[in-house]
Length: 110
Length: 113
Image (tube, rainbow over all chains, first blue to last red; front, side):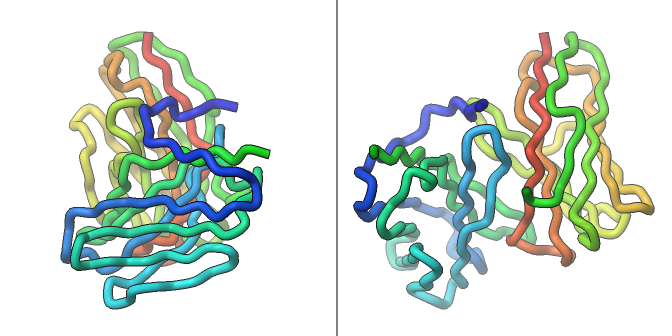
């Protein structure tokens, strides 16, 4: 399939290990922070969000952590699977718009 | 499958030309968003329509325009195309006026030669 082709930070993990993808944001006034996943040849897909007044939110196999002190957001994926291979984007809401970060490419080795 | 459809899937055209990209949102969604994804700029928000009206504008060039029709489908018009306009163009939809949980279509890959 087609790839975005960006020079992205990459993370390579072994199948079954946990993955941690990090993101720095700039706007302290953002209400929500969101993670999207983009598989090769597809559009981004919503994974999980966290409101700015929360520190942690858990979903199915994913956890998002928000550290407002250092403006840092992370996505943890438990028991990473080959199907998790994709580019992961963090995004923040700003004036009703979604502002996306550059993305991290996750590669899962079998 | 997100339920958002985009046509065409691929488009190759020459500099100076004009093209129209089409998007059909998920059934019942009133908001449509357009994004450009390029090698050097990442995923950039262009414009949002809600129930036929422009709701928000991002880094959209004056050569680009969009509209949302009464049946809620949307078109993005790109004119006086330049080489730098080559990119993936995504449409997304959401049921509400301003939502961060958006459903993206498969994209249109535009190549300007």
